[in-house]
Image (cartoon, rainbow, N blue to C red):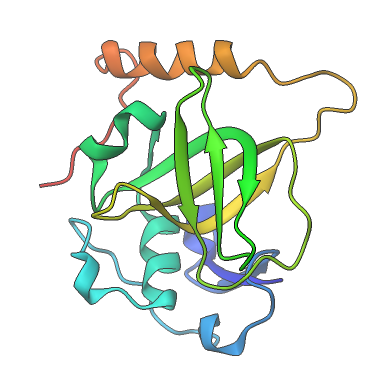
Length: 174
């Protein structure tokens, strides 16, 4: 699994670097030195390709949201954390429940190639159906200490209630 990420995001000179992500699918890789798009706003869903989703979502600021906020973030990049409830038999979709027990559906461009369980953080774009089109995900390890999803959910609510104190948490796109 690999993805190309602009080194500008990690202090480099615009070179592309690899990270663990995209299952090695060549259609999702950008050639070395290929430009990243710096969009002032998030492009409409009709303009997305798998590569475009990854580049734009990973490059733009993302709002942390819970399932109750999905409808407010259509066509915007988000970060959604939840407990895995169910994986669709096709492997191209799974359901996460947030700290309030509400569910969010996560769609994948390709079937999962690994087993998921527990807490998962998804970065993606909210679709018109109020699902999240996944650009990347991370499983949280809970072997030492369990993740308090309820407390996390309260933090997300506070970030949205007081955006003046958490300006990186809520980004509006026009």
